[in-house]
Image 1 (cartoon, rainbow, N blue to C red):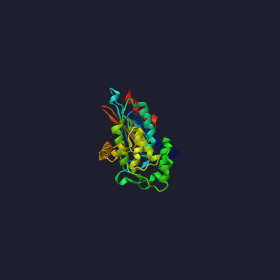
Image 2 (spheres, helix red, strand yellow; image 1 turned 120 degrees about the vertical axis):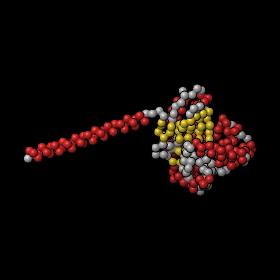
Image 3 (cartoon, rainbow, N blue to C red; image 1 turned 90 degrees about the vertical axis):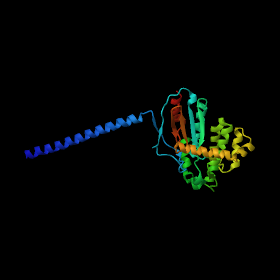
Length: 290
């Protein structure tokens, strides 16, 4: 009996030692992984952010699952004149509508220190262009509420009445991009303001993007003569400019709206791809201005 007892003790002690060794190995592995993860998340060159954006490939504007990653690399610059900010947007992008107040506030605070450009990306073109409830059914399904909840903007009653009614609005990104190109040529200082006006025209006032005559209503507010603006809207020169902007946006491979890119003499990096609030955007921008 004693012999059996001793054999049993030896067996359980051996098992216990193996269990301890395995757990010590696991602890070392877990500890090592933890160190790696901590060092990665504390890095100043990467920022994890929700990618609440409109996808250029599908035209769908939905919140992301939080898995996207934006690169932010601090660079030294000799003068503020070397810093350029490019805002990639589309006048039919719901998240851009929510992002407009952020960009307006950014211009108010840093407009004298930055060269801010606005580029139309062409969200609804070709096969993606069409009646709103056919090419963007996610809006009627309630996607606009995600934008309202996260950004604080409100979609207009006229716009929503059409979405939940006959759905006559036709989403096509060409004409608003043409209108912006015309404004950039003559009133470049108002390009960001006009971009915001176009978003409001569609998503608040319910303007149909294919109604070419309606654009002048907003252009006159920044100094255009109605007849001059209407004439330029028909000039193929500005359509060519808009198409070139679409191609340029594609070449940047950002693949989502809204997006903000910072460019210095030596670096070009994404500050935001998708919606972020003003404080986040400011915190990412400031290191480039120091």
